[in-house]
View (cartoon, rainbow, N blue to C red):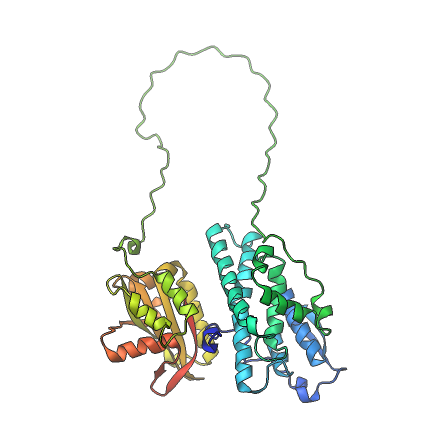
Length: 416
C-alpha cells in the first residue's frame, strides 16, 4: 500500500482552497432540472471532467473553451469528494497526482510530436514517456486491491483519472503498455461505462502504437530552366595564383565545454538509485529510504544542504508558495542528474516559510543550482550528519514531517 503522504508530493492546479464560487450548487439543493449554465474550460479533456462531475451532480452544463478550474469546484458541491476531511484530502491528493504525473507529461509529449515544442528531442520524449509509465505503475499497484481510488464509490479522483487516461490511451499509452496495466484498464472501463457517463466519454480509440514524431517533408525545389548556351569566349592567359591570407577559412565549431560536475572523481553513490529508493520505499523505519541512504551515501562525492527562502514575509496562500517551489524546481531542470530535493511549505496562510533539503553532486552547491535564475532568492547551509540537530532536520524534510518553531509542514515538492 502506498503511503498517503507519498502521493501528496505534487500539488494540483485544482486546489481545495480556491474553488470557483458556486453557492447555488450546494449538494442539499441540487435537483435534476438545475443548470450550471455556461462553464469554461481550457481543453477537451477538462471539458469531459466537468461534464462527468456535472452528470453525477444532476446538472446540465454548456462547455466552452477558456481557462478555469471548475471541475474541482463542482465536485465540492456534490458527493464526489468523499465523506469527511480525510477522504476529501485523499481525493485531492489523487487529483494532484493525475494532473502532475500523467496529464502534464502526456500534454508535453503531444506538443513534442506535433511540433508545438521545437526542436523535437528524442531523449526528452523518452524521459516524459518514462514518467507516465512510472505513474501508471503506481496506479496499477494501488488498484490491485481496490475498485476505486479512495472510497468504495466513485469520487472526483476517479473521474479525473478516467478523463486523462482516455486521452493517454489514444495517444501515448499503446497496447504493449496497457497489457501490463490490467487493474488500471479495469478501473478505466468501470468509470467510462457508468450509465451517467457513457454519453460524456463516448467510445475510446485505443492506440496500437504510441504517437511518434514524424519530421516534416523537405520542400522540393523546382529546377530552374537552363540558361541559353553562350558562345565560348577566348581563353585568357592564367594569372599567377597569389595566396590570400585574408581568405575566409571554413568555420569550425568549437568543442562544447564539459560540465565541471562531470569532471569530478567518480562516486560510489548513485543518485538515480537513491531517487528510486525514495520513491518506492517508506521514508522512515527499517528498510526505509533513509536507512538506504545512510548505507550508500558518499560524503566525498556528494553534499547535503539546508535550503531556506529569503523572503518568507512576502508569502501569502500556502498553495501559491507550493507552486513557487515547483517553479524553482522547473528552472533547475538542467541539473537534474546532479541534484535531489525535498522542499516544502510550513505554516498557514500569511504566516508561512519555505524550507527543505537538497542533495547535490560535489562539495559546493552553487555550481548545481546556479542554472536557475532565481537561485539567489534562497540561502544554502551545508548539513553535517554528525550534528544531531542538522541530521534531524534532514530526515524530517525527507519524510515531510518537518516543523520549524510553531510551523508544521503543509505541502511540498520533490526534485527527482
